[in-house]
Image (cartoon, rainbow, N blue to C red; front, side, top):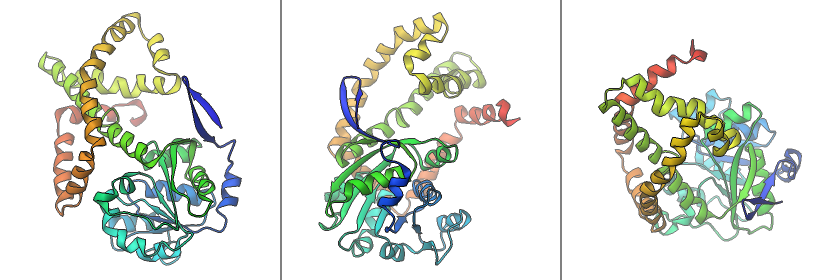
Length: 347
């Protein structure tokens, strides 16, 4: 259906328009092979299984994620297979390995993309940057995308709670004439609340910008800056953390999620309203050049090159752990660990 977002009309698919029953009818003869059981794999695979689809999982044997899949109820030799065997068995291959993992496994997966199959992504990276990744799908398969707007953990948690996480969808290649039905059915099957239309290029550029920006990178930077200013001016760690992170995540952002920023402003104290209205534009003006620089880096492919070069190195995991340790052991997040334990629901 067509829905207006502000003044712009967009194509959106809702559960009312495309029911779960219709999705199961569309995919009744398909074997959905979820390749990869890391970030998105568990949530999407379990949601599809619980919704009644024919799902198998492909993962490296004798790995932590193989063991996790077994713990989640996937049965070796029945619904859990080595990656290549799952790729051979599947008619829809959900390619949910990391970007570096997709590059490494591509020669193996490509030979099992026989005519009429579908290649499914949850990120436009591999295909959009094909000159760097080498991922060029055969012309006789459907190439589709469903990208949940959140982590696989959130997708699963919201599904179990009877809710849904909105997702984007895209069609890169319709070889069978069934790509639109397939991608819509899969989007409903993995637990999307609604699906909004995009393309592979727009998905990856907005995603790389978002995760480096307000979703992760920028928000951590802003948290750190405010926390450090408060601490430098004599505020205790608990006070600095509560005023920087805890109140935002536990009180204010839920109100924004429910009703919007304007409603949240209207339901805060007049002092808070005045200050927020006076200061949001200076913060926008200060950070907009950084976002413009970030978007240019994404658009020019620089961020893709950085990701591929870094994530493909043998020591990537050990270096990642070191960087995460720096965050984990910072005073701000050490304070956060204590504050979380003190929440009423944890006592």
